[in-house]
Image 1 (tube, rainbow, N blue to C red):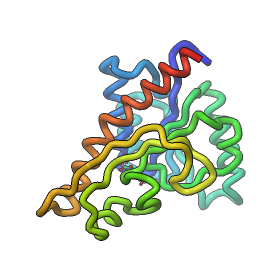
Image 2: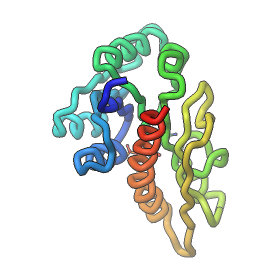
Image 3: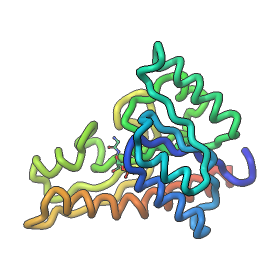
Image 4: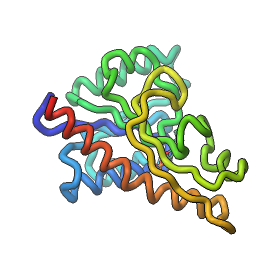
Length: 195
Ligand code: GAR
């Protein structure tokens, strides 16, 4: 592995977690470099954010490929070219297949806005809100073939206070995400450097 850990951040949407990680790196809280931002949504806001930060992007539209294997092979080539050490899924709303998993096993992590194994899948905050739970939160986990499965690395609870709206809860969850993700990435880097 290179001295400075190289990250690829995968995102399909707004990219607020990308921004939090990028800021933490700039401020010296995470000893890494974002070598590439990968997005499966050509119109995603995260792409402009990456460009403004001067970070290379790999943007693809899955509809233009015959299979997941074909586009994941292209991604792997882009990752190898940039010598990426870690894949950071940050709102990448797509299951990862074997083509990407095999070369990066144990080096792909995901953030999910619930206390897994509760509320897997889409709109986890809405699922928790509608279920009326009093505690939900954020999970960071290693990625495997399943949807929001894989060994849990870190979790933090968020309390659903009386009178909170769904947007209030989303705001509180994202606040936690933006601290927990950079901190967890740095912990993994520290562990990797010790190994
Ligand atoms: C985040 O809240 C993340 O936890 C969630 O998507 C959001 C992306 O926001 N991921 C999932 O639901 C994965 N199953 P962002 O684009 O502003 O970082």
